[in-house]
Length: 161
Figure 1: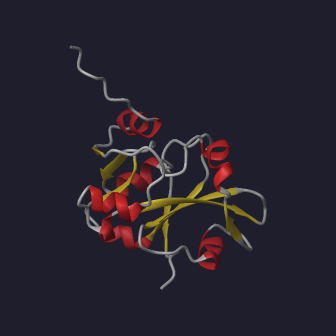
Figure 2 (figure 1 turned 60 degrees about the vertical axis):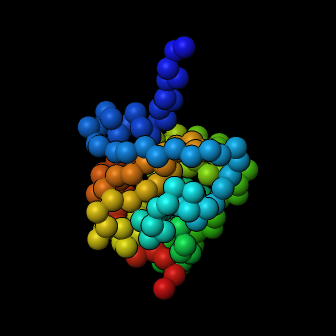
């Protein structure tokens, strides 16, 4: 019996092309599961698992924010960090059209277009973080600095305190 080939996502291909090391963690998943449930399934520390949120600014441009799974995006801080008057969450039905990913499988690396991206500054002090691997059932573990480089992101204080 042939060994099943692991399907690489666009994010994984980009990391490999940039020679960025990562570890893929997989889990069974048929539909959207929130980050806390995924962290619990994989026995990962909540403070190291980050979610990717996509917003639209008052300018109609899209912006990507990567924050800890148990935290909430501070819309005012987020808007300020990207030079917008305001931002609002992208509607779930528009995620695929804007990013090329689906809800629960969205990652800041390898979206259809390069959007301005901010990673919460809490990630700067961590050795590794976990983010979606670009599809349901896949998380990737890498250093925050490597995520920043691959996503062409900057750090900013963007969560509600």
